[in-house]
Image (cartoon, rainbow, N blue to C red):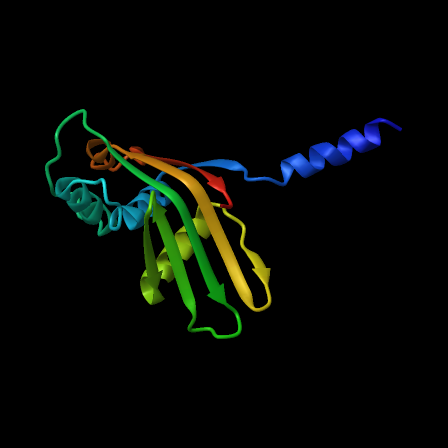
Length: 157
């Protein structure tokens, strides 16, 4: 009889935020879309991320240097009633950035591609991640061998 309560306790604990790792093109796209709005990135880092997002690998980047893209939270929502409604909120410390329309849809789609399951209620569909940390090695990405991009995050906020 004691195993039944322990089972329910472990089930409740398992429903919290789940850690995830994504690599390859999904990681590169997620990092690139978040990097556009990331305050701590330098102009050079932002430029390299934008070029990689566009598939343009004809740029130089210092050897043995990586780009780290961080966000405290990314929360996106879409409507299955008002099919024109979509938005995302990115949180970088005290700074919040709101995306709408196409930018929000792109971020929503890449979060889904990264394996985050949508949640829904009352005509809304939600996806959210927290503690996002992406490490991008532009020189490895430029080798076109599938490496150089990895992101970790917790599912949910």
